[in-house]
Length: 306
Image (tube, rainbow, N blue to C red):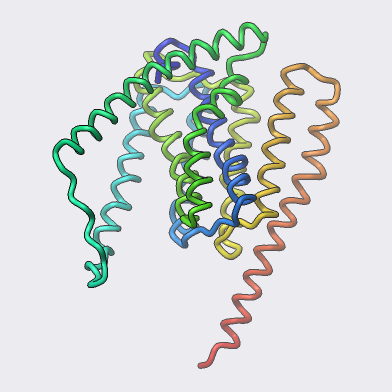
């Protein structure tokens, strides 16, 4: 929102797109390397498809070169619907209290006051930090002679995604593996509907989307979201090899951005290798994994009694 208010549209859109790519490829990849992650059936049936749809929706809305104010408000309305629906669903499906369940400790008024003060202080520091981050990123892009979009896709995106990285790593180590994945998927949905929606809604001219992002980075973000579906479908888990694959793709993405920013002569060779060799092999591998799962499930159904 800070970037949108001061007219740094490339930084705002680059932050959202880069964060979503960072979340899926780097955070899920790193977390899966630490401990294999397990996804709930709801993630594969509802949340990942929603992430894919909103990623494609952003691609569509940005096709004219920006996300306007009205579109930003519509995105925020979508966030309200997405957030409200699971809450209502959870309330309907919530089981009654178990006899062995330990009641939550009551909070005293001083404890609640301290918690509220912590929230307020954190929000104040967050707003100040956002301003410093935007100004520092703009100054850095000018000093390095690179676009604000590149800074937003890399440094700003990685910096603003550090809380998600810490949350997913800790959740995975503690055995809360569903939280480790849900944190990433939910964050990606919130980034598009809430962060970009709010940024476009408060900016007088909406949020501009660079043509380079429209040609390459937004398709990469959408492809990363789509890649989650077959990975979650094959057993509802992200194995260490799959995590390594995600991480390798993030490294390749950053290498491409650097080669592009420096106008390296190796860019064409690298892009062709990724486009005609690495990506097709990955797609073939994912398709084979999905077909193997479908075949095993059919075999299990055929062998079941009755």
